[in-house]
Length: 342
Image (cartoon, rainbow, N blue to C red):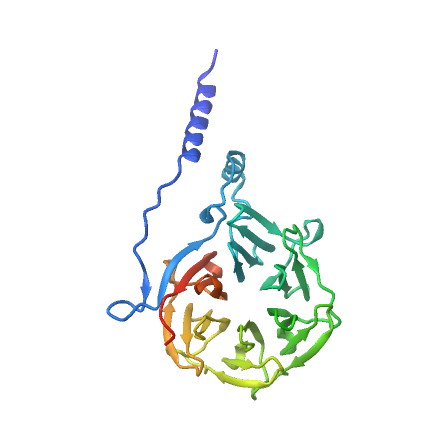
């Protein structure tokens, strides 16, 4: 004979299964653009995501039950700091999860990638996609660059012939097969050959052109122009691929277009320069001369608002999709540039 306690348990289990198996309906959000009408729209909000499920990468019933009783698995972003995307595969560096999330929306697959034997990565903060589909990861605590090969389940340390102090921003030059890396602690940018040989270093601590004060992030354009976030000089500097200084813009202040704590930098297919500012909780868009074109954001949790944004990646091949690591909101926000060349 079944007692009341057993019946209550069975009833609760059936209710739980019903909740888990019935998909949640989400109403379509009203289209959000910047600047608002009547000005012509330049940027539109596409989506945000914090879990694999929000990208259409589903879990089986067992995994969903496990998440319910034991807490969400590592597929949830904790403190995303950098992001890269290519043909439906999104990598997110996440010191909070102590690894790199790989969301493969084409295969419907998710993995949290760490070092060998599931060794956590204490501070993965930079990502760059290589010429052959590999992804390079800078870890500022380990003082290492690691590489994630296509379909690999672990990140493997890259042997470099220079000891790094605090590697952060990273980029890969497909044409010249060079790895470019910010060493924040050494106030310089280093260029490496594929075999790890140091090719050149640019910069030292200072405030003159070509000098840095705790640089953090990098962006390399298809035309070979390198942008560097010179964080505590409150400016963006740009260089050619020989390391020659080209230009800079930015100033410290609390007004629109000023800099407080610049982080990520990227460009779209029209050459506009996008800069995330962590203390302004904003995305600012400039022209090549440093003239402010459009500010977006402010502190908050709503779409288009940020809380300590960090890295930014623009997928020009996908129609200028803009990925922003909204670190303390524990999500990636995705925007798109829909304006013209001006």
